[in-house]
Structure formats: C-alpha cells, structure tokens
Image 1 (tube, rainbow, N blue to C red):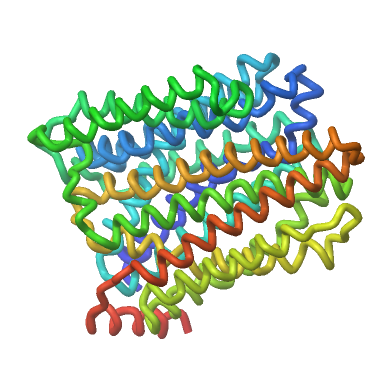
Image 2: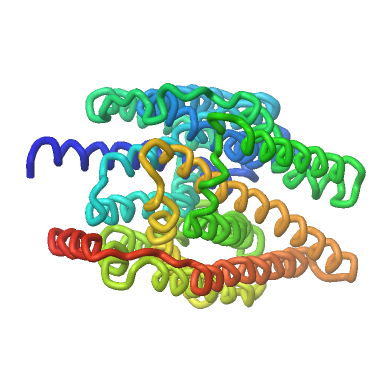
Length: 482
C-alpha cells in the first residue's frame, strides 16, 4: 500500500477519533447524572439541562457548520471546532456550579456540531472510490452507532472509579492529540464552494429556528406542552423556518439549496434518520435510567451492560456492513437492520420490575446492536452518495441535523410521556419503582413505533441506484478485507 493510501486511512481513523469524543459526550453524562445532581445541587427540573444544553447548541449549529466547511475549508473548520470542544470540556470538568456546567455544555455542543458536520464531508472527499468509501463509512458508522453505548460504559467506569469531573477531562489529551495529528494527516483544502457568499440571512433564520424548536421540545415537559410559552416558541420556530425556506428559494448562493431535496435518496434518508434517532437516543438515556433506578445497578454495571451492543455493532460496522452493501445494495440491509432494532426496543418494552440483566436486558441489547450495525452504514451512503464535492459538507450537516433533531425530539417527547405515565401510576397507588418502570415501558413501546416507521420508509420509499462499477469496487474492497 502506498504512503498516500496509508495516510488516507490514518486520516480516517483520526477523524473517527475526533467524532468519537463528540458522540460520547451525548450520552457519557447519563450514568453520572445522579452524582452530578448531588454534587452541584441541581434540582430535578434543572438537571435535564446538562443533556439539553448540549443537544440544543449541537442541533442548532450543525447545518451552519457544514456550510462553513464548504465555504472556508473542512480542515480549517474541523480544527476550529475541535479547539472549541476541547476547551469547553475543560470548563465542564472544572465546573463548580450548575450554571457554569450548563453553559460549558452548550459550548461543547457548538464545537461538536462543527466537528461532526465537516468530518463526514472530509471522509467522503478522502474516499471518492465507491468500494473504499463503503469500507470507510463502515468505520465511521461504527463510531457513530456504538459511541452512545460506549459513552455509558466509559461514564460508568470514570464516575465509579474517579469522579464525574473526569468524564469531561478525559477529552483534553484526546483533543490535543487529534489536533496535533490533524495538522500532519489531514489534507489542506480551500473549500469546494470557495467564491460563493455565505447566506447570512439564511444562516440566522435557520439557526434561530432550530434553536427555538429544540428549546421548545426540551423545555416542554416543564412548561407544559399546551402552555402559551411552548406554543409561542413552536410558532416562532415555524415562522423562522418558513422565512428560511423563502430566503433559500430566492438568494443566489443559498445556505441549503432546496434542490438537494429533489434527490429522493437524500430526502428519504433524512426522514429515516429523524424517526430512527427519535427511538434510539431515547433508548440510550432511558435504558440507563431503567437499569439504575428500577434494577438497582451500579454505574459501572450499567456501562458494562452496553458492551454486547458495542461488540455486535463493531462486527458489522467494521467489515461485514461493507460486504452486505456490496452484495445487496443499501435498501435491504437498511430496512432489515431497522426492523431488528424495532424488535430490540419491543423486547425492552416488556422489561419487568424485578428483571435480570441476562434474561431481560441482553436480548434487546443484542438485537439493537445488530440492527444499528447493519443499518447505519447504508443510511449514510444513501444520503451522501449522490451529492457533489462542493456540497458534501452541507449534505453532511443536513444528515447530522436530522439525527440530532430526531434524537432531541424523541428524548424530550418520550421522557415527557414516561414522566406523565409514572405520575399517573404513582397517583393510583403504585410503588415508586413500579411507577417508574411503567413510564419507561411506555417510552420503549413508542420508541419501537418510531423505529418501525423508519424501517417501513427504508423498505418502501428508498430507491438507491447501483452500478456495475460500484459493485466491482465493493467486491475488491471485500476481497481486500480478507
């Protein structure tokens, strides 16, 4: 293998390490939340902002981050986002008050949005050949799909063995190493869309609209879903998004060319991403709470419970997924994987109060790992394969925005309904643990419905194109794996 090809694969692993930090921080705090609450004095209603502040800024800035990469260079934006995220991680780890931690988490989300949006574009540009691209996306898919459960494991180990501060401080040496190696391994680029203007009006309206929409969702449970405050936020977000669409239809260099959504695969893949993330992200958070609050597991055991999911994801994402895509295209493995994930969520919906890890948790974990490992790579390929180099950062931002918005919406809505169900059961005389379990089970049922809808959309609506050259390149990639 030539030096150039070797450096390309090293660059891939480096980018994935940077993205792994971002993905981990969406769930690594879940296991540590009770400890953080006791240490910093969060109330029950404000503790959720340790998660929500991150999701709010992350979801709001993904689209803008991707377009800035197209305009000013993906490498430059990757390094900038990495710096913001790493410094914000230091602020999180040194936080001594709830306000400081929430503000630092919001800054983490901003840096994470930029890193994630441009990393996928860099990978797509590093691997223009379809066979190598399938392998590269398999590695990236593993990082994204397994990172959430790895976060729970790492959060349990660091919180139990050291303190909650280290779930953030661990990012410092990783961020510094990724930055230094990026200067050496990532190719310089001036921006594939250089010469175009930044659509400032579009950037302001869409970012403000997304921020308001996510805020309305994550704060809806506290303020009330039908309250004037929540309805006003949703209304303002809708008006801003409508203004954004009008601007995009008229401006010369739009932030998000609406013609992108005439590409069937990209549009359908984003819809699937929203529905799938709505079920899966809520599962990451609520299953960790179920293990702690209902089954009484220690933080370390909660993290270890996610290991089988990670192992299955790794087996598929790091090799098997590329072979499956080569043989069957993207549609069949996508909908089958999502159907398996739906079955895993359905198994969680029957989790009893006095359940066991082996009999009542592991089967669902394994199905979810198998489904995610099988489906994630085909979904990304379906969304990105038909996009030109000058818009790869934008398409990446759109895809990641769909995932994050779906995750934020799903977590907020399902957690709200779980809380309402728990309160109803408690008011009826149920014991605390039984009431909590009833709320979690409802959330898992609804999560299975979301993921099932994504499976149906993938099987019925996606129309990926396949070519002989792509098939031959994929076969060569599979042969190279041994």
